[in-house]
Every structure is written in C-alpha cells, then in structure tokens.
Length: 405
Ligand code: PHE
Image (cartoon, rainbow, N blue to C red):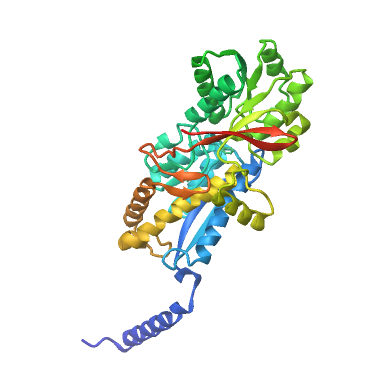
C-alpha cells in the first residue's frame, strides 16, 4: 500500500530525526553515564554538627577510594547528601526525598538514634536498605529487615559503663541526668540503671533536661542533694560540655560518666577545664596501636587535617560494608545489578528486587575488616563489637580499658 505523498514525507522526516538521535546519543548526554546512587542523611549543621561532618568525611573518603579504584565493575558510585540539621522532622523529610526523588538504592545515616528512628521506617517501607554507622538505640534496627547498623547497641554500652562504675571505680551511689528528648539518652540511662542496680549499686536520683537547654542548674542541684559519688550523663556533647561547667560551679567534685554521644572535638572546647576527670564509653580509640587503625588515621589526617573521631571511623566502615555488598551483587547477580543502575531505567519491580538482593548481601556481612573492629551482622542486623572506656585528662582522651561484648 502506498501512502499519500504528504504522509510519505512525514515518515521520511521522522526517520531522519530518529537517525540524528541515534548519532547524538553516544556523544554523551549526562543521562547515558552509568552510576549507582547512594543517599546520606546527616546533621551537617546544628547542635550535633560534628556528628554529621565527621560522618560525611568518613563516607566521602571510602567513596573516593572506591571510585578511584574504578568504582564497582567500572561503574562509579555517586553520593547524594542531605543535611537534616540534627532534627528528627528534617531527617524524615531528607530520607523521603532521597528515596522518592533521587531514587537512591541505599541510605547511610543517621548518627543520633532519634533521627535514625525517623528515617528507618521510610527506608523499610520503600525497600531501600539503610545502614546507620552509629545509632546505638536498640529500637533502630527493630524498624525492619532493611535496617542495619555497624556499631554495638545501648544495652551493651550501658552495661559497660555500669560495670566500670561499680567494679573499676568502686562507686556505690550514682545519680542520672538524662536528655528526655533523645531516644538514645533514655535507652542508655535505663540500661545503666538496671545493670548498676543489679551489681549492688544505688541510683541516688534520676533527673532530666531537654536537648537545647542551656541552664541545667535546677536538675543538677536536685541531684547533688541526693548525695551521689558520680553522675551518669548519657547526652550529646553540646549539652554535656555545659553540664560539666555548671556541675563544678555548683561545687560537685565527683566524676561524670557518659557514652559515645560525648565524642566530639567540640566537647572540650565547650566544657573547658571542667571536662577533665570524667569517663565515657566509645567505639574506638585513636591510641590503639593496631596498623589498621593507625593507617586509617594517617589517611584521614592527610585528607581532612584532623584526627578522626568515632563517627569518622564508623561511617567509613558503614560505607565500605555497603560497597562490599554492592560489589557482590555486581559479581554474582547481573540481572539485579542492572536494576541498581541509575540509568538502567529499571521498572519499579526490578528496582525493588535488586534492592532486596542488596539487602540480602548486607545481611550476610561476616567478619568484615572494619577500622572499628571486625563486623559481623547478627539476626537482628546489629554488630557485636567491643567498646572502649576513655577518660579525659588535660583536655585529651586517654584510653582506660576495652570491654568485649
Ligand atoms: N550512639 C549515639 C546515638 O545513638 C550517636 C553517636 C555515636 C554519637 C557515636 C557519637 C558517636 O544517638
């Protein structure tokens, strides 16, 4: 059948345009570059900013190393970072954006447990694997089978500090000052309380403040009146620095005890002299002479001109656990690998299946050689790792002891 002349012309023009498009395509519209998109949500600003900045540094370092070595099967990984200002509501918004708009295939973050508790259900619902480098509250990984962490949990951390208080410091009476707006602080305070009591210790008083407070004299005065030998203050560095100053102003001379939330270069800056003589538990110590840790510290210092804190180390590990899992999908499941590629234009079902395969690889992480210790993820998607107790002397952290899980 012959078409009318005008129809033939139209067809000819279409064919010619299609030819041009075919010729132009390989010339590299950005769209044609294959990549894998990974999201990060962090507190890059706000009163927990050093957590986010260190996290970002660690992830970026792992990413640069990976991409410089050819990425994964020749495909580069691209990181999309969202600042949540350390606020739970913003964390939810950030993760929603990463998951629906950017269509990342995995999410790294957050540090503060209350923020991870906002992001995790969104990742779970969308079938996007999430690895938190540092959220220690038990509930975080209980949000579902797509939620992982590469650090220990607070029932362990609380036990570590309670044993340290009772057995190493020989304390009999300890008061607690908790942050009522932090799931982390509440959980850690409860674990400490339970273990310290089970070891024969007495909790003299249990008071609370709210994150963002600057005057702690009310609850501190009430606690001091209960006659404690020490105070357990499982908060974040901004408030802990101020609490340390104010407790000394009130004449209390005993030690403060705390957890990983103290770890920040700002702690001693805020607390000054008043920070000396206290103890806290943490994930790693820069004083560990192991070549893995010292090698990492050297690389990190060369890149950022700073000694990495626990967050820098944990986020480096979290990113590398994710990259190893991506590498396994690439090597073993070509179909799923295609589903993870940002430009694969994968159908939603194919993407979901690919992220499920990635989830399975992360879940199988075993004896992964991390800077913060060997990482094996258990049935609850938590890592079992040792903790260290550090003291603060002359404005510096000093290693006191290491405690195995
Ligand atoms: N563990 C803290 C939380 O869950 C976060 C944290 C980890 C802070 C490590 C500092 C260092 O909220």
